[in-house]
Image (cartoon, rainbow, N blue to C red; front, side, top):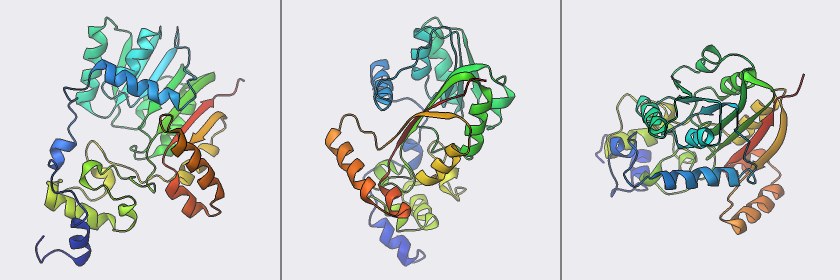
Length: 287
């Protein structure tokens, strides 16, 4: 990096991987060729393992897939008898891919919503009309999580179920989704956001218009911390039936070690840097 860059930027650049693709390649919305339906279904199964395999009964249910990606999760709901599925996704390309995937399997009982406006949940889906909502690896990306949570609550039937699981929280080791760009844990808590983005623009061609992590197309994060999220979910009058953190079903030793370690930390500010993920099932109280 040239002399026009600050000392902090030069230091951070030394932590970056120079042998990786440019930013646009890494943030592509195109599904990789190696991503088959089998691969995606394994991800889906892994998601439910974090809920102790308490997979809901989708038969004859109205379902919302919030952040549907390429449509494989909602395909599972359709294949298991869902009456109708609302697929919400901010990426037009992924939403189109979802529709094509479902149609190729003979399913037309779905509505596809370009969720560029958070109000789409309540503007395009009737209040108290949904039986099941699930959202996988989305909540760390949305600009206003509390608005999403309130909207989910408002469109779900009394007795309906909401499943939200995502990773990672911002203050955890790899919170900002740097991917292969930088593999040093907690590096984003050492260097400022402006310093990191400046280096990424120089090294990887990140768009010059990006001013915050949230602005990064395809992988922007809202910097949500665990205790911020917990405060949000505690403010909504639903029933919490499952609430789990640091779920790594394929790594039982790591999971149990983290559980003990986190429980021993007395300070929230220190505790939450070791909380990586959250998997919660909510139920709307019967009236």
